[in-house]
Amino acid sequence: MKPKVYITRRIPLEILSQIEEKCDVRMWHEEDIPVPREVLESEIVDVEGLFCLLTESIDIDLLWKAKNLRVISNMAVGYNNIDIQAAKQKGITVTNTPGVLTETTADLTFALLMATARRIVESSDYLRQGNWNTWSPMQLTGQDIYGATLGIIGMGRIGESLVKRAKGFDMEVLYYNRSRKLEVEEKWGLNYVGFEELLKESDFVCILTPYTKETANLIGERELSLMKKTAILINTARGGIVDEKALYESLKNGGIWAAGLDVFADEPLSLNHPLLTLPNLVTLPHIGSASIKTRLKMAELAAENLILPLYDSTPKHVVV
Ligand code: DGY
Image (cartoon, rainbow, N blue to C red; front, side, top):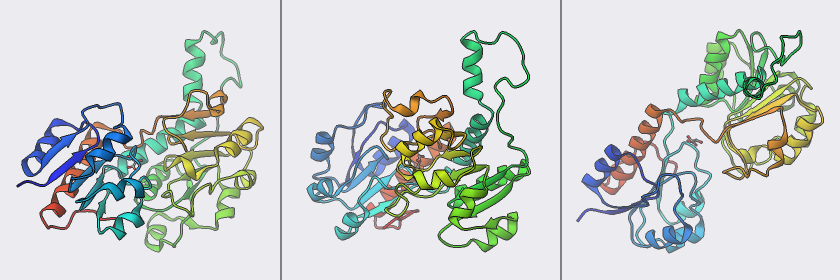
């Protein structure tokens, strides 16, 4: 008998067929509507494997209902949507999909940095809204990227890939990380600095650290006040790392110059959110890893991570 699994969203057919070869699959068939909580609560009861996305909260109450669950395969590198301690206590393996999305996410992070610094979205709207009457000396002027100082908070895989892009723009790179990364430092000529120094010295601050109890609201009123008035904050990690109320105030009152956000504390972002009234903020709907190739690789890796432990093999990427 094949092990029963539940997939919380419609996934590409070729990946679904790979899972179906080995598992007895039930799936939430919508692509753009998350599985309702009550459906997930009833589906989880008897399955041995769960393939889920970052949109599902796999909390202790849900895990409590699972009678046979052995593996949770999250199709994301981040896993803050899962109660890892509860899963560990229940002996459930949790897996994620690092590596395959590194370069794509670094691309998007640098693209967002450039779009924010050079006011790309605002400029495009300016033209389309019929405001382009003439060329003028200081019209839509932004901040230089070339030769600027980039501060990276979190020097993991994506952090290092961002460095590669920054070096092509002759940027000086500072970084702050829980532990020093000597090899990376030497390879790219980076400066390891304290958290406050990074905030004070950087023209661009990029957040690329996981969301944990320690990083929740890491960037708040005090941290924003340490940054340069011309600085730009970029967040492609998780929304909860930035205190959005404090960011709103800082952007509105000229505390920092601009921000680019791909992630928000509550996703999807409500259209009534005060942040959306600001002209100096570029917002994206959590698309860091959204290239066709990368999303297929993530789904494939998540499928492997789901199947392997159900057949007593070690998954490719174990969280716990
Ligand atoms: C992740 O994988 O954690 C991203 O946020 C989505 O690709």
